[in-house]
Each structure stands twice: as C-alpha cells, then as structure tokens.
Length: 147
Image (tube, rainbow, N blue to C red):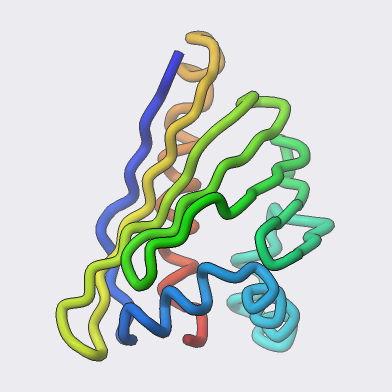
C-alpha cells in the first residue's frame, strides 16, 4: 500500500542556490554532520536516534533506532528547485523522498519534504504517526543547518 507524508512548509533564511548546493551533495552534508558534534544541542537532536552514518556524493547510509539500516540515494536534481531521493530499509521495502524549494527572495527559501513509501496496511497504520513526526523533525533539522 502506498502512503504519502508531507512536512509542514518551512523557511530557511538563505537563497535556494545555497540550500540546493548543500542538500544535493551528501559529501557536503557529511562535513556538516561532523561539525555538529561540536554543537551539543544540534548534535543531540540529529544523532539521538541515528548511528553509523556513511556518505558518498550520491548515497547516505545510516542506522535508525527501532527502524534499522536506511539507505538514501539521490536520483534526480533540478537545480535550486527539487532534490529527489530513493531509499530502502527493512520496515518499508522502498520509498521515495524529495525536497521542494521555492525562493521568495535572495535570502528567503521555503521548502517542504514529501515521503512516499510502500508498506503493508498493518505496518502503515502502526507507524503513521511516527513517520509524520519524523518527516517534520527532519524538516526542522534542515532549517538549523549552517548554509
């Protein structure tokens, strides 16, 4: 069964170009994640449930507490507008995830996250609220990154 989860629309006080350049390259994100260990508030928020993070330019693999190993692959980039990911893990055999960016002015970009996942009916009902919460938490974290 296909399920769709959409985050609340969020705002980042940077251009869509800066936001896109960071979020469309996992290697650049890896540098940010390494630096967050120095910022205890952000580090605790990001790494509270995430362990064993591995990055390449187009792939990010990590373990999430109670979900297992998740692998994300960047499959499409539309400069300054959209970044599409595919992914997989044991709980949701496959999923697609994307970030939509809309620049209102040079230092004001709005975005939202959309997650499509295939799960059996029982699993979807069981995890719905946790997934909705998780999608919004990821959006909140993206707002706090140093672009």
